[in-house]
Structure formats: C-alpha cells, structure tokens
Length: 392
Image (cartoon, rainbow, N blue to C red; front, side, top):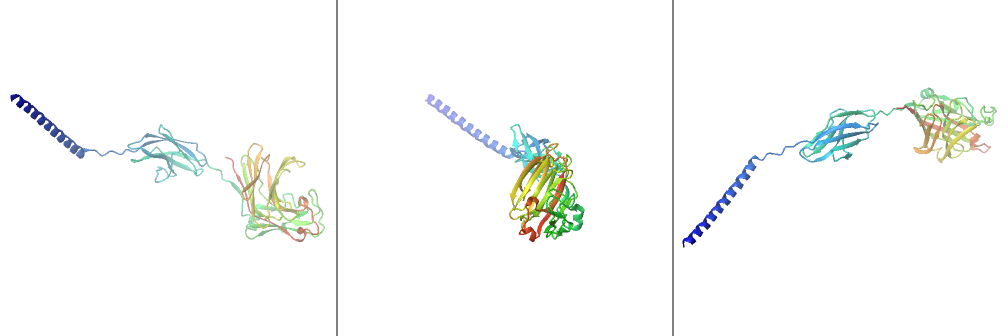
C-alpha cells in the first residue's frame, strides 16, 4: 500500500511540474509579443548613393555619361540613368532624363545621350531610383561641338524685286552675249514676274541679219534670248569645304530649245557642272566635266526624264564637298532624289553660276516648221539658293 501511495505522489508531482512549465511558457510568450508590439522600430529609408564619373565622346549632338552606384540604400534599384538641363542642378523633375544604356555587375552604368543641340552647354547628373526615393550624383558640365552655320549668298529671294536682283546678279554671260548656240543674249529678254519668278524669253529673229556667234561653233545668230550670272563666285576650299546650290525651274523641252542652270570655270574651261540642261527633249542632263584642257575632257553624265518639266516646278540641286586636297565629291538631285555622284578635281577652282537659255547647237537645228520659230519659249526660275559651310 505504501509503495502504491509513493508512485501516486510521484505521478502527481510530474503532472504539477508539467502544468507549471506550460503555464510559465505561455505567460512568457504573451509577455514577449506585448513587448514587441509596443517597441518595434520603423525601418529607415536610405536613398541610393550614386557617383557621376565622367562625360566622354562629346560630339555635335551627342555625349556619353559614365556613372556608378556606390550603395543601393535601403531598397533595390528600380531605375538608373542620367538627367540633364541647361540651367544647373538637374533632376528628373526639372530636366530631361534617360535610363542607362548599359549596366555592369560592378554597379557602373553608361547612358548615351543624343538629339542634343549643337554648341550648347549642358548640366548633367547620374541618378538611381528605389522605393526609398531618387539619389543623385555629382553635377558635370559639358558643351557640345558647334555645327558651323552656312554662309548664305543667295537665300531664295533674289528675284523678289529689281533691287535685290541687281544687287546679286549680272545680266548676260560672264564673258558677254554669245555662246555655243544660235541665240544672242539680251537684257530685255530677262524679266521678273510676280511671286519671285525670273523669266527668260527666247524668240526667233525671222532671219534678221545679226552676224555670227563669237563663240565656237560660231553659228549664225537667229534667236534672241537671255542669260544671267551670280555676282558671287563659287569655290571649294579648306575654309569653305561644302557648298549647296539649288533652285526651282520650269523649262521648255521642245526641239532646239536649250535651257540650263550650271556652273562653269571662272579661270578656264573645264571645269563645269550642269545642274539642269535640257537639249530639246523631255529629259535633263546632269553633267560634271573636268580635264587638263578644253580638248581633253572627262565627262560624267546622267539623264533623267522629266515629262512635265515645262508645266510643273521641279527642284534641281548640287552639293560639293571637299574630300581631299584636290578632290570634291559632287552630288546632284532632282526633287530631293539623288541622281548622280562623281569625284572631280575642283578644289580651289572658282566657278560662275549661270542661268540661261541657248537655242539650236547641241539641242538640234530648226526648220520652217519648228515650234521655236513660231512660238516664243520661256524658261522660269525661282528660289535660287547658294550657301557655303565653313570648315570646322
């Protein structure tokens, strides 16, 4: 009996100890949760730390910015890049910004800027954005390379008035009234029309005796027509390595008519560039001519059909760019479409710019039934543009 009583007391002790242990444990947990609820600190937000390393490859309208994230702060980086403006202290709110172009595992990143204005000063900073906010690097300053502005000799308004015309153009050819056809040039055959249009009129003389042309092949003069040449000469040099010449024209295309818009050597012939040259057909020639002498020439020619050349305005353009100490890259366009490209030894050679209408000669002879004998022909031009861009 005593033995059973002893076991009973031992079992009761175990149960009592277990109950106390559970009770203490439960009380400890409750006390702990209450403490955390009263004193748990709010997590601090730390901005990313960014360094703007350098601005490199600064060109006319672009630059490259290198940067690095030194510390991401309290949250993951969501976006990184560069912001810039023209006044200073740029942010993504007060300037333009662009995300990084490339990112390295080391934290470095690169942003390539483009579409900038040439010759302008910019303020730039790297940035990195996370849930904590946006951090910025040091401010860097750079200036894009200035694109040289063209020197405009004829701006498209020289046919607007008699005063402007006389200030920028001379009548006839640079060498006089005759050239390589049967037409003699007269000032009265050149007139200004409304809308800034210049008109050259060609008309048959009905066999009135006026002698022969003073220029080869010295044809008998049987037409009166007109010619003008710009007062400013055109010369590709190191100082002025790029030129653009253009104009809008309506040109006759009947047999024996010979309208042209061209440049020719001021010192000798060749050189020559024909920007527009119709020889009695509905196709225009665009030629470049070079060579050591008039009887030793090299021609590069392209023929383009313009069936509505007489009734519709078309734009004809020449560009010349110096590509070596002696050579010029010549390009010619019609209505913005490139038609021919050639490289010629034109550096340092001055040109006259001419608009004229010859007759017969290379455009064919006439007969009693020829349209040009019975009907005057008209060559119209407007918006003549001549400009040279200085070298950098």
